[in-house]
Length: 385
Image 1 (cartoon, rainbow, N blue to C red):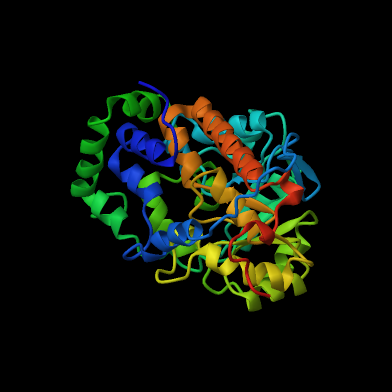
Image 2: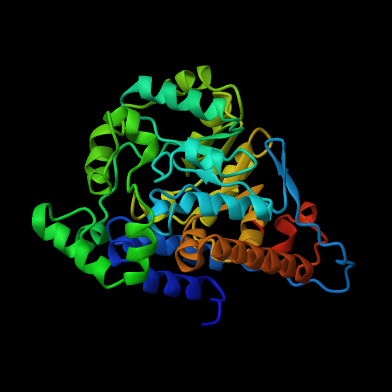
């Protein structure tokens, strides 16, 4: 079978490869998935200007973020339980990211522990933190990733409690409990024998390695959603950022900002960056798309913070759109998760090469000779200041 071309093909290949409860976990959003749809629509509504007869022979995709030189302004966003998509999937993804010259932001709720992932790669990954009620665990986790040389910390701030995801309940990931739920998952596993051999048997242990200390042992996947509901801390406020900052002296980025007022507070507390993000449509439903929220936030704090963005990004042209709206870098989640499910490490490498090709093409056709040339002038309707 030919390698999938484009986001939709990767998504279809992932659907064929993994059990339904895992595919729906990655693919779905919260409630009626309106925010998920708005993210995509908002990005696609951004119209680019075609410009001609410019020297675009250099086409430099490289940029710098938080002191690190990147091959292109793209990051692999944190994806929880990615290690269930392919055998020890986080390791395969971080190797692909390293080979492609871009960072991977590893999730707190990865299947592989930070120590296992670091042992498999030549350069430190970036890390995403969920603040648990047990602050001792948070301190210990920060100390672990710091000791491993992790240079940048992303703190997710838009998950005081998980948003209801009805797809996960229908698929059997989060319900019903007991034998019925187990049978629904097992029947899906048996329908995907390649996954069962690669991950179900070969990818053990099926535990969330970073959470082992707080659980006094390994966390089983079917316990994760109930664990998160009990341990994600809804009492976290801006004051808690002082606690995080006191235990982390590297670049600190807040992920999950959708309002200019909140963005200004991020700058005021001394963070280094933020991610304009609505959690990929997986938290509050009915929000605007991130591409709609990005310009006002970039205009409010872009001179004080490094502004990143995610949500609805399906290809290199979407990356270009986000950059033109004010982002300095763009995070992708579902795209690399589908590529990992479809083709493992090589799949993620190919996906990243495809994004680079699409971004290079978009730069040339809008008259830009490199990332440094990108700005609102390449849009048909630039954001109003």
